[in-house]
Image (tube, rainbow, N blue to C red; front, side, top):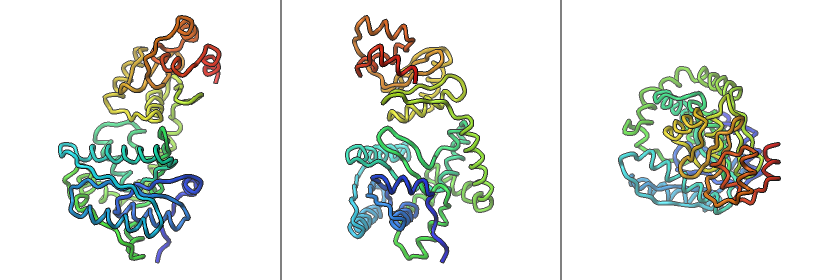
Length: 335
């Protein structure tokens, strides 16, 4: 029997110190991660979504409930019925909203996702086909900060076939979603026709390439600071749009391609913008200001202070709403 797949030490340290929620489906990936986390002494609870499109999903939920009882874990279950026009997108939105809601309401600090190396490569190919930059091509990261919690992906260095072997060797029960074995959805087509065949032949080289690309991405990373809650400053220049994208994610808004394009046009023209009706992006001379968007009736003295300090108009409402004075605004600018 081979050694089980390893979870990176930095992720284990984070998870052992925090309150964790595992996004569970009872497929190969999340079932293997369940047992790997348990063997590593990580405490966690479960969340599972039933999309009601397969009869087997009821068995998966029932088995997940049994597993939760057996291992003394809390389990959260959500049943949804989605449209068929863009099922993959709607399903992803539904589950992330569900997981995020649980994390916020129940105080989970880390959301654990079972994405593995094959998923990472499939994402790379899908983004490559759409036309994407380096950060979008790399996509999934082992650790990713969200507004209210941290996303952890402990299996990104592990191939799916390794996880299948781990489960078979221990005779552990898991389910196979047959829709993942067809080319009905785009990701299934990419997997069947491109990614799996390529990785079977060139896994070592692809893994090394991702390491090089990640190092390059760090060198190109934007300069971003967070001097106070919900206030972000992105230095103008190299990687500024990526910085705005990261700040928006931390404020709970994942930008669409259209929103990124809109933001890029505004910044290029030195104009402010509001993204998704939620986030204010102010085009300062040296820094881009990113805050929640709030309309507020401000007094003349505050407006004049903001003008003197060159605070973009779009961000002033949030600062005023949060009781910022000229003195503490000035202290923010001297971070």
